Image (cartoon, each protein chain N blue to C red):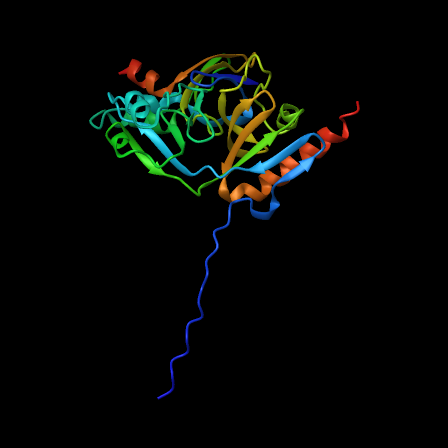
Length: 90
Length: 189
């Protein structure tokens, strides 16, 4: 498995650390409803198909990435810097 | 009253990270320790002009991702996201306005692997593509060397600068020695 780091280029999977669903980039506002916070903290989709995860380029440049991949075919579809993804979501 | 015991004269001798383990010569390959001088991690400030300051103060071009500039006396090595390593001279005070400077001298073990087959040795230890078309002299990478966080810079076709945390120096020398012996043993193939 290879992931293309936006900074370093294509690298082996062993350089990366997996953190989980990229939900952390969509943190609710403090005044949002308890249901929103419950969903943010506890509820996760388990898609058969395309999913977005946070990965850390631990052994490489130290960047946090949002990696899009397919859980059915195991294709890695792309990766962007988490800082860019967070700005895009705002 | 008894005379106070005299403190014996104490002489402190600095040791390098690899100490007596290096140099090593195996077949066509040599592994030697490099005294890098000062090591300064520079994190450019947003909107700053580190490139101009670095050029004016040390005559070095600011390297982009994956690149290293300079010579043995003074190098600037890309060192990760928004980080550049200044190796050699003490940082000029003018740099502090353009980047957050952190003195990491003595924090890293720095070795030089040189000789025919040097890339074959490293290929046993790191997952990056070392072919000259992809990783020519002047190219650098933050990557792993046998599970250690490392920085590898290609100095010439058959010469690499390898850095790991100082506490890992013994493991680094052991792993490089094993790989060098393996490559040397197959040299006749």
